[in-house]
Amino acid sequence: MSMPKYAFFEGKIVPIDQAKVSVMNHALNYGTAAFGGVRAYWNDDEKQLFVFRPLDHFNRLKNSAKLLMIDLPYSAEQLRDILCELLRTEDFKENVYIRPLVYKSLNGIGVKLHEVPGDFTLWAFPFGNYITADNTNLKVGFSSWKRVSDNIIPARGKISGSYINSALIKTEAELNGFDEALVLNDDGHVSEASAANFFIMRHGKAITPPLNADILEGITRSTIITLLSEVMGIEVVERDIDRTEVYTADEAFLCGTGVQVAAITSVDHRAIGTGKMGPVVAKLRDTFFDMVKGKLPQYRHWLHAVYADEPVRA
Ligand code: PMP
Image (cartoon, rainbow, N blue to C red; front, side, top):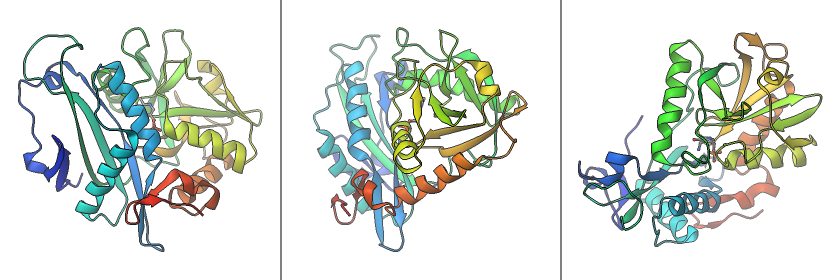
């Protein structure tokens, strides 16, 4: 990972080595933080850096903050503007990954959420693929861990402490020789992967677990639903998926800010479809990567141009 030079920390942009919290920090001790993951894509033809759906990401972060009783003194628009200022300070002219974080900033003990102040920080760095395996050919297995459920740690928030669940899932998968894992929820239905949402293709329809299946409300997921239906004319159904339905799917894929769109070609050692990336996922990946770089005029409203500092409209 290449290191950022700056961070937004305690209300201003500072050199990264000044953005530090104490060992007494509440979030460090108890996981009482929530984060985001946002991407910005460099378009070399236009010499422009496009942040993908920043307001949607910051609104979700504000909702996660609400779950943790952290009062964020910034609107989503202000957070986007802070982000653009940081990206310009870094002078990035390549694809980057952005990490906003809200965290309990108290130095002291006491496991509770109320009466504990919070703060916001943000940093970004150049980044390629999150999954280092071939993103057109992922081998996936079902996890022995279950996905955190809403009444344990709210799954729809990107809450730092709950990523112990993701880390257990990811590590088990990799140590068992898989690239990623799929996770069942408490009801025994498929929820998602360790840090990505999940779709299958079956009988010509795209199927993805619903928002109440203990999934993170993925921004890429909602983007993909739009692209599948509007660009590719494929019906998308949001409903519970059984484990063995996945084995018999024609195609399967993961999506998220980190993984972008990645084809799954086997699950629990069973080939998905032909065992090679299928036509829907292949076309979807092309569409997605064109879209994030601003090449699909009808979706430029999802992009925010860093060096023009205004939403990009066709
Ligand atoms: N699920 C989990 C658990 C995640 O961490 C992520 C990555 N943020 C996703 C799904 C995908 O969400 P998004 O498309 O908003 O990045």
